[in-house]
Image 1 (cartoon, rainbow, N blue to C red):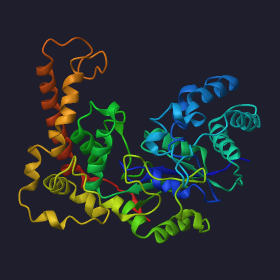
Image 2 (cartoon, rainbow, N blue to C red):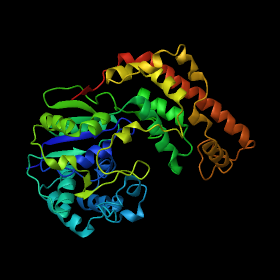
Image 3 (cartoon, rainbow, N blue to C red):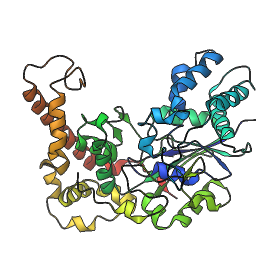
Image 4 (cartoon, rainbow, N blue to C red):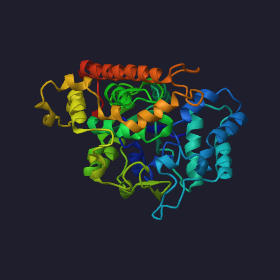
Length: 404
């Protein structure tokens, strides 16, 4: 018999999804995978479900090689802090490939035909068998849906009798700065316009750097009914009152409290946050109080707060300190600090001269590359303002997720 309860963890930008997953990691009533290892399980099924069972297994092992040799895939492992686990910070997340394959094959052979739920449950159960964990069939599977398109959320509701969605919520102003810092810190996102990405995802739930599609960070994927529920917790509450916040999740899922929820681990090994963040295992209010001065000025924060007043109000955040500034919304037409980042601008200007390396402006040689670059900058400058104005007009009409 396959598990029939699933809780999907959804992010709202950089809102602490990895952190909450690390706290849920060791609970005896929850079965999970480390980091974002599980995120691509449904897209994998989408691409490969027509293969024979043998071809499917071999393709799965190939595409998830980073589970077994994480050092070869730093973008998927090191960037999520999965290469420096345990108190000594010298443990990696690697598991034995032969063991996983053996368990995976055994579980898939329990039914003649391969189906989506069997596949999904088999991956979670095989992985946890390798690391020495056994779960009963009443366990909740923890799936990191993490801004996947809505159709994958619908699949989960079709496959599981109880499909719950836990949204991680964070102050939209700080979230804006955190997302800009996150994108700016990674070279492979160097060609994205920071203000446009932040205004798109944080204020309008549309991911530009993640693939150009709608996301559901602050709004439910699907309306509640007897078997589907969406609830949110605030990252600030999790750091300020961890036990109280985590007990609200236990009550929601109807599972017993466990002290393991107060320890941040993956595969039972202590986790120390992502390398780009504050190096800390567990709770610390400093994490939610960062200023992000490298991409965000005080004036920038005031402008974002003025645009996001409805969002701040819905989730119980204060914007009083910015209300006294008159005509602040008009100031969105002035440049933001993240738009004046010289280092980023220089990288983008150089990249346009070699379009074969990163052809995001044009896919052919450019006669006047500097002119093309500034033309692109103006286009993105205007696009970012459109996203900001769109938030002002539409935010109050949205059906936001309820907080636990």
